[in-house]
Image 1 (cartoon, rainbow, N blue to C red):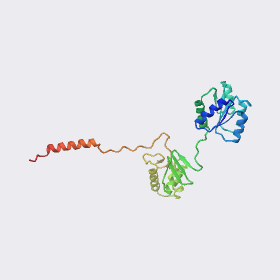
Image 2: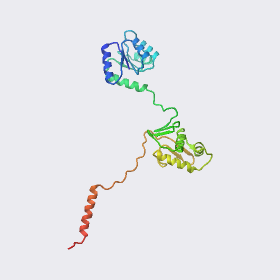
Image 3: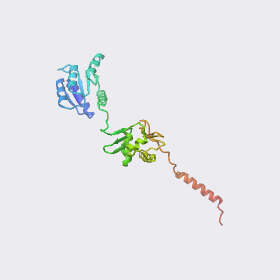
Image 4: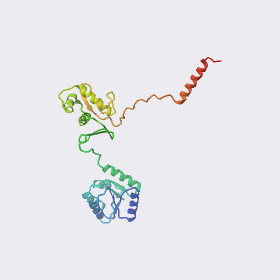
Length: 263
């Protein structure tokens, strides 16, 4: 990142604190040097002091915006609301009023960088629904980051449904598109759905992704973000050692009570 500050003491302090926070820092003392830096080097963020000796802060900001869309945090001694609004309209992403602490600057930088990062996008052609990822080109399917081992027909069925999330697909259309048949037995679809549900960790009675509408068709609909997989009922555990010990003691006493004494 680039620090633009004409005061050598302030600049040195900023460089030290940012470097300690694991940031790679470049620094200059004038607006023209800043313009040259962003034109020649790729930076993630600019901290721009408005009290520069060669150009006014607003003019420097506008010239900077003419070269790059890199996030800019302006440092200003002015607390006037109209001035701050003008700076934000001129292209500043955030601002700090001097004096400010290094902790405050780092927090602002983190927030600006988080907002400026593009949202995570799926590779071209990948079908996504909740925690399910289906890549028809590579014929790969993942659920919550774990690759699914599917047969050819199971993958074709899953990919076809994933390409229409939330849409109820009639069984006749599934036969035509997945099995390439104009007619057939519904049991074929039911069997493959059952196998597919098992690999997705669900059942027909407790579906998560594959929902059957009786007499209509099937749809793939991801579970709500807050929903969790059903938890299996706890297994009945064997008696603890103390239970067995008490049981054995009781049996032993009972045996001695009823067993005839040999003489």
